[in-house]
Image (cartoon, rainbow, N blue to C red; front, side, top):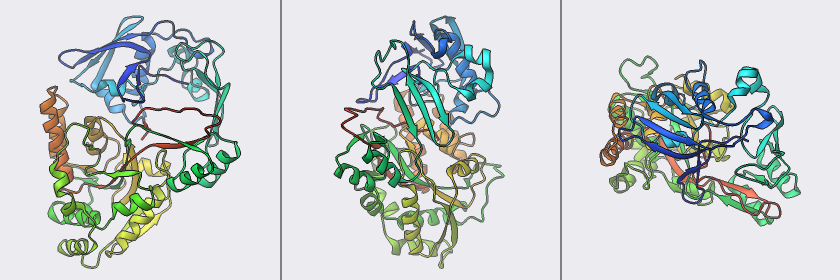
Length: 471
C-alpha cells in the first residue's frame, strides 16, 4: 500500500531505488541529496508524489507532539530540515553527520510516503480513516484488531504493472493452531507460525519462505539499568541492577544459568545461531573476535557456576523477580515459550520467577517511560546499523530503555560525529566491549524470519533480509 524512498534488494540486502532514483551523501556527511521519481500517483486521485510529500513526512515523523514512532529522535533532532530544491529533488539537512541515513529512508525505516494533499484536505481524521499511499495496492477496509483489506489499484502501477491478486486481506489470529488450520484449509495462503507448528505445516505440503540471513535478534530485556548520572528512574534495590560488581555478578549468573543450545534445539528446531552481544553480528562493524574466545567463561551454560556467582553477589538463597512472558511479536511467536524455558532455568539456581500475563501493548509504555524496573521480558528486534541499534536500546533518549551508562553515551556521541570507517569500527567495538563485559542483557539467538506459504497459490515470496518490524 505504501512505498519508501529506497527499496532493499531481498537477496543482497543492498539499498535500491524506489521513490528516489538517485541519492548521495555530502563529503561532510551533513546532507543527503535525493532525486525523486516522476509520474508516481497517489491513490484516490490525490495527485502526483513530489518533494512536498517528502518534507511533509519528515514533519509527521519528527516534531509532531505525541509522536511514538521508534525513529522519532532521528527525524526530530538529527534531520533539521528537508530543503525542497524543485518538485523532484530534496536535500536532507542534518545537524550532525550520519552515514547511515539511507537506513531510515528505506524499507528498514518508517518514512513511508503519504499524501500531503490528503493531510491538507482531511487532516489527522483522514489518516485515521484511510491511508493514501503510492503502492500497487490501496486501502479498502478494516476491522480493528481483526483484519485489514487492500485492493489492486485500477491502473498500471509504475513498479508492479499487474499485481498478482485482485484483493489481499491480512487477518489477526492470535492462536497458532488457528493460523495453521486457516492455512491448511485454504482460508489463508501465508501464515507466521512457531517453528514446531511450521514443521507440521511443511509435513502437510506447505512451503517455507525465509529471510536471506539471521535477521531477528531474540533476547531478554533486564529492565531498570539506568546508570547515567542523575537518572532518577534508577532503583538500586533490584538485584541485577545494582551498580558495580555485585550487579554484574548477578547478571553473569543469570546468563550462565541458561542453555541457549536447548532453547535453539527445542524451541527453534536448530534455526538460530548464538548471539554474543545484543545487536552485534560478525558481518557488521565493531565485531570483536575475543568475545568468541571468552564466551564460554562469561556466558556458557553452567548452573553450578551460576549458583556460586549468586552467592558471591550476596544472594546465596536467590531472589524473586517478575517476568512479562505472555506476549508474542511478529517474527518470534515463540516468545512465551522462551519465557517459560528461562523461568525453569532460573528456578534451578534459586531465582523465584513469577510470569505476569500482560499484552505487549501494555508492556511497551513501561519500557518507553522507564517504568520497567525489576521486570524482565523476552524481546525481539531486527538487524540494524549498530549506531541506530545502540541509540534505540542504550541511550537515555532511546526507545527500549534497559541499559544506559555515561560511558556508552559519551562513546556514542563521538561515534555520531565520526565518518572514518576505521574509527567508527573502533568506537562501536568499544561500546560492544562494555555491553559484553557487564552482561547488560540476556542475549539469546539470531534467527531467520520465516513464514509458511501455500505453494499452489504463492510461487515465490521474497522480503528484505532484515525482516523489518516495528518496535
